[in-house]
Length: 454
Ligand SMILES: Nc1nc2c(ncn2[C@@H]2O[C@H](COP(=O)(O)OP(=O)(O)OP(=O)(O)O)[C@@H](O)[C@H]2O)c(=O)[nH]1
Ligand SMILES: [Mg+2]
Image (cartoon, rainbow, N blue to C red):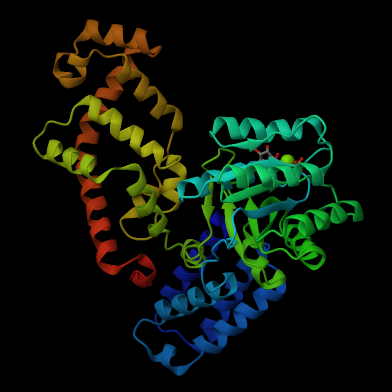
């Protein structure tokens, strides 16, 4: 997410730092580069103009020019202005006073409505809600089945309808009744998509809106379509009145401009982003965290949150003790790797790290998902005795393990070497994790951390 833009801005800032003193002239030049970077990232030109003007007015102030750390101040100002553009605070979902709260999921064909409906239901469940799903996409026979499969895979209740219920309105009405009868507090309605906005689609959505009185009408936009996504969001808003946007496929090589433009152009907040095809590749959108990512400051808050989810703290303490006492076995190594994977792909973890300071080295590490799977397979092929004492793994054992895991003796040797190194690395990593956790606790959230010093 935002990788290209972030890289470009990093370069601009680096040049600024090289300037020694900041003057009105070189600041002007730097802001011009920021402008180009934003436009190249496909940010709406009006948004760029407003942002640059706001930054310029504030940054040209004598205070900044005379301050001891003008770059940090300028970056700080850009950060604040970016947050303003993205929406000053996180936009939470609304819920009705009388359950079930109905969320209508709308958008163009293939934008990711069905996938996002499943992801959102999962997210809601994790956050203490009891969602019910229904698909009213009656035009494509496979469409409702697609949602049914997602529901089954994620153990989410879905209203299937009766053979007589062939109309969109019938289905929606029964689904709401079903949700209410089963004590479900949210009904997620996945709707049909169209290639283009047309009257028939809008009529249908309007009917659903009148019938269900939804608290949220979430427009699903495909980030890969850039400014077109922003335009259609705006069009939907004018015709239907949307309450928020889910921007999907932010994991692809989308330039991220849509995310920066939606709020400003439509006046409606970006509420969630989709970052992959899997059902957990979904994040609530936090303007401040996104601004940090764009400016290459990393998204430590999201990382720590994910880490806390994946690593239970008791288990972490136990692990640290083992490391210190040199009792860290291959089995622990495997469990640690598995926990690490729960954080998402290695690549996505690294993207959350700031690109400055000590994390820079980590960024250059080439994550290899297959390698991780192989390591787990090799360790799984060992006997418990071997896992607890790697010293006994001699030549013939190595051959057997290689056969069992479908790898080679060479790979087993590599693993044992890596295990040795990991014992060292894990010690540092788990130390850092503890440190971050404590720091977060003290500061009451990282929003207050502001800019890390360069
Ligand atoms: N990489 C990536 N792919 C996504 C994301 N969200 C959805 N997709 C993929 O996009 C494709 C279309 O997704 P659907 O959820 O079927 O889209 P839809 O809007 O329901 O499509 P229609 O019902 O045909 O209008 C699928 O292949 C999804 O896996 C995402 O965040 N990242
Ligand atoms: Mg669909």
